[in-house]
Length: 407
Image (cartoon, rainbow, N blue to C red; front, side, top):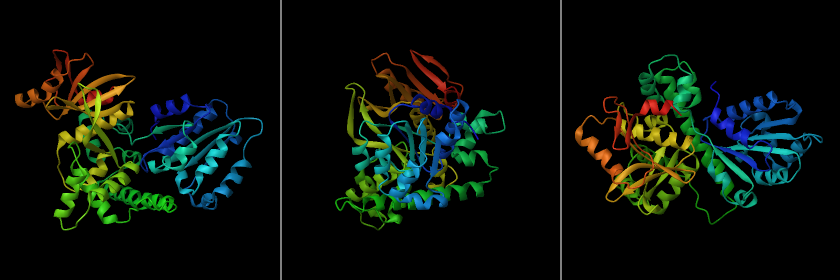
């Protein structure tokens, strides 16, 4: 089991602060493990077992506590009167009206509250209203390549990266004695659980709001997910997807496509990257890109042996930038494009990503947009080849594998 160091640092930073810590991320990405690791950290700094109350609502023995009133009474009985109680509610979105429990615990003294969920929908609606300004979200992703390497035997980092591109970074896959058959079965189980269970949870929570459209067509949802998986790194629009679905024999509206994409992003299957005008420093509303949370899931959806190495690498870099705390957009520079504009602490970095720069035409295509940016923020091209590395008039060409390992 790899220690999720960066996420543990974030939890430790917020320990005992009067805010609710909300840990979000796709199913099986390691949220429950992270909470266990953090609880061990608490014990290591002197917190007693009686001060830690931990519930996972996917465990059958906690089914009775899916009633929010029973849950609240259960927690009240276990609060320490003389010391801080650390309360962990894992997959809390399964409890209808859980926000009432969370809100009431928040106002009590000496309660440090941590909740997790596998769907961003839990942070919308009533909960967001109740907790406005009173929570911090810690978004967790599957393993980074650096974390993945910590679980593997072998020193050939390029070979490990090839395996990472194929199998992805779900912690259990990275740690098990794997074969293609076992990996495929596990990924299929994760994907079907996300599609079925998260929709079910989402629909239950929307039943009280007649103005919210329901998403019930699993076949359509899977078709849209497959289209998006094949379009990683390319601009998409609701119209282009609707046209594609219609051309395959089923008529669908742009509004329906928008609703189904919302489901997929709320379940953390896809992450959006908006377009950004570098010169004007402002977001643009058209033709965002969507990146998939894990390349193993992408391979499962596309079900073919080989596909666009460059776009797969681009997807890995996008997720790594999120892990490192950047806000990530797609850059527009005149009539050209920069793969990523990464912003943190009001400072920018610019990235181009390509499998290789050995072809002169590719080199010129990738470096030109960066040359056209007139500010002095760092500019990098990440590539898998090692023949073109160096500094070109202030633009650094780096090996992508090395960059991923040197966080």
